[in-house]
Length: 494
Ligand code: ATP
Ligand code: MG
Image (cartoon, rainbow, N blue to C red; front, top):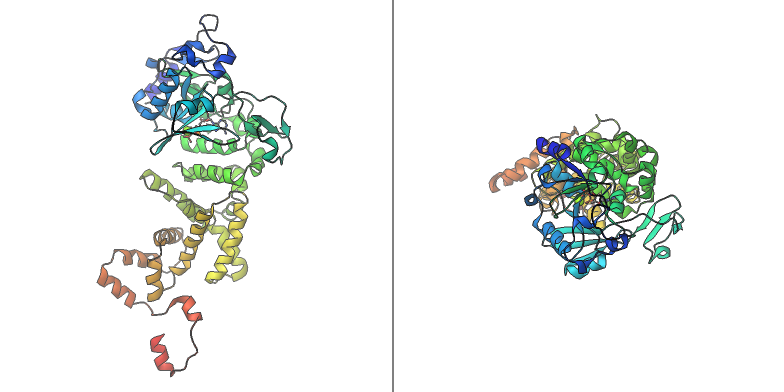
């Protein structure tokens, strides 16, 4: 692969023909597309600032691209629009990895794309994207973006209503609030975040167009922000998270200048909507490199901003709570590598376990809490976290259930064991229990008991249940009726 990549990097690179050499359409036409002119050709574009890597000089084969993405490229091209595979699709193929998804960039506007594809859906307000759904696969198509005019500046806490209908808007601190100004491919390239993400693959000659020395940075495994890093982070603070995500996922170093302002600007993430931050945290933790990502989050101030309570109580890596967090992230990576699913409920359960324990210690002096005490502590912990990363209810409810199961799995009576085993989230609760033991919590071998119970046959299970007390669990005990029978008889029935 490396040989191939080197070929891509050091093979023949053509400085593209200058606009003087080749006929090209004017900027406004480029922005609008020119459907009446038939199939779009690369020679229509001004690529004088780009390196063009010919088909034989790079390792991307059309066969490794999703057939749906290829179809979309052809359909757009045939309709007279320029269309390129961009972003992770190109970057990951150059690295010999399987792209997570395929993104396409075009000069067709969202409305023009909608006219071409029956399955097109316009998504997003701040940044309009077209989703083309092909069964389970979604191809994201975006229109070339351009720089913003300096007008349309709004105060920090601008409401969506006041910028309604605007295509371009930014806050006084430089954050982009609306990013729907369209331009040409040259404008689009410099609006992308990192150089490795700004490579364009075209089906016109199967070439790669490189405007920002992205190939060189891929070769050097460097993540480099296009333009002035601080300005670009201010425009969209989520780029701070993307820097960490790509550094972990690709194993790239973050280039010196790209890294320099990251800590100082980390608090800007507080101005992003908690819902968007939640989505980004999922991308961070479910990309297959959660353990490495968490280490990086710790190194940067970003971790403290995203998960303040969790970071504060897991500073000492030797504590069971800190170990649990690391093991949960490692476990997540293993599951994903095996093609298994992971649930945000489990991830957040692990991230917030240490804060939950701390909250409980405040009131309990180390004793095992009752269910209501733990529920109250869970409320406090989740309430603080959702101010930063809005955890959708369906996940936070499941997180609470996983935590509740930790108590219920430890109640060793026949009745409690039977009901907990039938709980729909038993498996997640059990997995969490095993992680706690693996992290060094002393739980009296309860994890092993549950492991044995699950693999036991009917008779063995019956024996194991016989071996437990017959108590009805904490709730039942509290509801016990006044004892009217002689003590011995009452004891038998308890
Ligand atoms: P992956 O899909 O593997 O997570 P990706 O690089 O494809 O990585 P996407 O989120 O799919 O990331 O975005 C596609 C491309 O859009 C990126 O490669 C980048 O060029 C551009 N992009 C996405 N988000 C931003 C952003 N916040 N700022 C600037 N450019 C962005
Ligand atoms: Mg992508």
